[in-house]
Length: 165
Image (cartoon, rainbow, N blue to C red; front, top):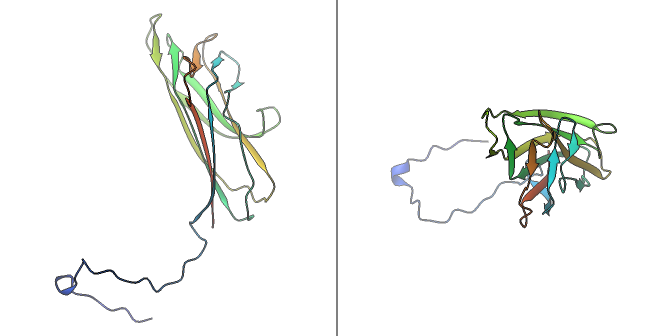
């Protein structure tokens, strides 16, 4: 294929140029699954599944990648911070732990502080069967971290996107 150099001074950038190439499935978003929730979760010193964070997606090809994103407003008391794990499965006991995240906060007071959680992960499941993903959290003190503490609408958001490879 010959490459032609175009002089930018001579090219009219206001013209519409027709695309004549071939589009393949690589990099295309094949499906998007979303979930929203309003439940609250209080986390202490043991991992608990964050309410409304489970999402199921069925990949259309074994070569697909699944991009996952979890987002929830949250608060922490004192110096608790939060540890979070993204898992394939319903719980860390029966699932595969992908990633562990640590959001530290040091305050040394009895006030609640913002400690939102945003976790992303890209999985290569090598499967066309339905897969459930979820998020678990814990912190350094009993009931030290709360997701969606006010129970507002659509405060927990989860997105699973299948990306063609």
